[in-house]
Length: 417
Image 1 (tube, rainbow, N blue to C red):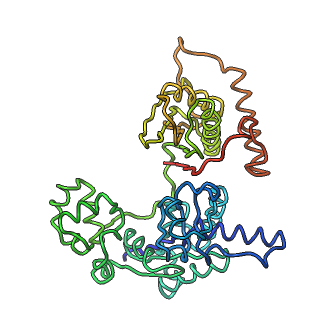
Image 2 (cartoon, rainbow, N blue to C red):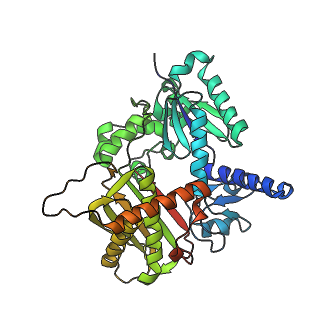
Image 3 (cartoon, rainbow, N blue to C red):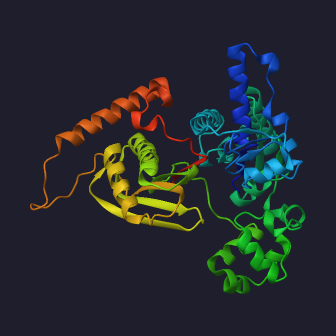
C-alpha cells in the first residue's frame, strides 16, 4: 500500500504572522477599533518603510493585484502602489509562530518533516484509519489551524512527496488539493515549466531554448538531452515532471553544518569604524545560535558585498573551536581587515562552519597545548548570562553599549544549513 503524504504550507506566512501580532498588540492597547488587517490591504513585509530599501519578503493578495511580486525591490513595489503599507520582518516572532504550528500539527501525527519555517511534510499513512479519506483529514487539519491560530494553510496530498509539494502550490489560500501520480497528466503537465519544483530561472531559460515550455513537454523529453544541457539537475527535473520521487519522511532534522547571518546596511559603509558594530552584531547573533544548539565553531567566514554588488569572502580556522561572541568577533574583525579593499560596502556576513558539539573532546598536541584563558571563561559565563536574560525578558532586554547607536539594517538573512 502506497504511503500518503501531506505538504502543509502557511499562506503568506510572514504577512499573516505579522497581522496576528499587530492584532494582539491592538487588543492589549485597547485600539482594536482602529486595527487594520495587513492581509486585507495592499501591504508587504520587508525592508524599511522610512528608507524604502530592501526587498519584498511577503505580499498581501491586494498588493499582488498591483503586480507586486516576492523578492522584487521595495522601491519598485512602491512605484506600482504608492499607498503600499510596508512592515519590517520580526524573525523571532516568526520562529515562535512556526514552533507553535509544528507542535500543533504533531498532535495529529508525529511523523513530520519540517523543511522551512512555514512548511512541512506529514506522513498520513499511520493515521489513515482514523479518517474516511485523506481529503477529510487534510480539511480538518487546515480548519483547525485557521480556528486555533487565525492564519491559513494550504494542504497538498499525494503518494509522492514532490507531488504533494506541487499540489500545495495550487490555488490559494486556505485550500486542499490532491495530485496523485495518476493525476499528473491532467493536473500538472499542462502547467508552465516555471511551476515545477526546483525549476529556477536559469533552467527555464535553457529549457525554453530547447522548445520546452510546459511540464508535460519536459516529461516527454529525452532525459539524456536534458542531462547534456543541465547535467544531473536535468535528470532531477525530468523525474519531478514525471512524478518520480521515492523519498520518505525524515522526521529527524539533519544536524546543522553551518550557521550564518548577513545584513544589508542602511547606507554603504566606507570605514572600518562603521563596520565594526555591524560585525559585532552579526558575531553575537551567530554565537547565540551556536550556543542554542550546543555547538562550537571550528571555522569563521566573513563575506563582503560591495556597492557595485561584487562579492568576496575569506575564512580562517579557530585555534580552538569556540562559540563566544568575543572569539567570533575578533576572528571576524581580523578577516574583515584583511579582506576589505577600501571600497564602499553594502552587505556584511559572518558564518560559522565545521561545527562541533560543545562536549566534543579537543585534540591537542604537547607543543600547542595551552590552558584555558581566564578571560575566555569569563566571556563564556557572560554570554550565557546574556542568553538567559534574553530568553526570559526578550531579545531587547539587554543590549551591548557599542550597538546602541548602530544604524538599523535593511534586511537580515539568518542561515542554518
